[in-house]
Image (cartoon, rainbow, N blue to C red; front, side, top):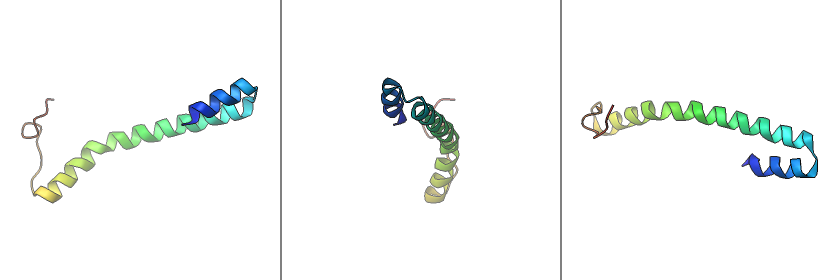
Length: 64
């Protein structure tokens, strides 16, 4: 999302806004990576609560 702002700022010669947009973009990327890493655990816990059993890779049709 901040890519467009950074490019427009750079084209306009606004190095301050360009740098700010890049910093925000990097922080969002880092946050997304942290959240993404938690998804498998959260999904498995949710599955266990709903279905009442712990999912395994074998019964999920997934390969390790």
